[in-house]
Every structure is written in C-alpha cells, then in structure tokens.
Length: 174
Image (cartoon, rainbow, N blue to C red; front, side, top):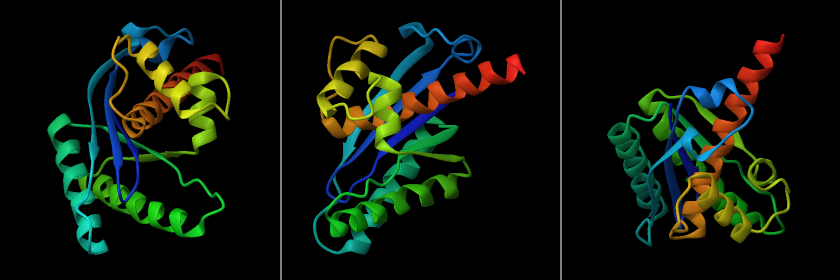
C-alpha cells in the first residue's frame, strides 16, 4: 500500500510517501524491510494571497497523489496550542490537503501529533528531533529527512502503516 503523509502548514507543508508490504500487516514485529521510502519534500506556497497559497497546496498534493498512485492519505491532525491564529491557518492548509485526497478519491486518516509520536518513539511528548531520528531508523536510511516538516510527514505515514498492522493483527485474533 502506498501512503502519502502530510504535515500541513501555510508556510511549509511536509510530504512523505512510503510503501508498505503485505507482511507488515500480518505481524506486530516490524523491521525496515516492511517499509520502502519513496519520496519526501517540502511544499512552500508563495507568499501573498491566501486563496493562491491554498490552491498551490491542493494542486501539488493532487499531483503527488497521482504521480505516486497513493492509496491513502495520512494527515497530522490539528494541534490546538496557545495560538488560535496559527491553529486556524494550519487548519486551512489541512483543508487543502483533504480536498486533494477527496478529489483523487482516496481515503484520509487523521492522527494527532501525540499519537504519531507515541507510535514512533514510544512517547507522546517526544521532540521533533527524536521523531526525525526514529523515521530514519525505521526507514533504514543513514540520511535524516531534510526538514522537520518532512520527517513529520513520513512519521504520520508510518503511524498509519502501524495502525493498519495493529488492526489486521486484532482482526485475526477475534
């Protein structure tokens, strides 16, 4: 299964694309052979008009979904911190991502940051650098993702893969 992970933002949106093999669904033990790194990049919408920035994100994400034939989109859900304005802007970028997935007719799964961190690091309050390190370990690459946005996007894609594996394991036990 090809998963496109998205860490939404109006200034910088991280995108990570991975592929899982069928064995990752059958066993709770995971190793790097269960996942293949395909691409990661940062989308940087042009500054200025909000509608143009959202259109930029929508178009580029739709192009990536089609190029990589992604089957599902995993999106880091909104974090509600102290700054409501930042949360609002992030939500708009998230909406552009959701629209791209809907237009491509692929399902979307939302994961809160704490769940992503817990799935990868084992600690829901892990730092972004810890997540970045674990992403490179799980994907068996010596090179860290080029930005924290990229590692967050790959992390949410991996979180979805782990969730699918856990669901498959649970369904075989019941």
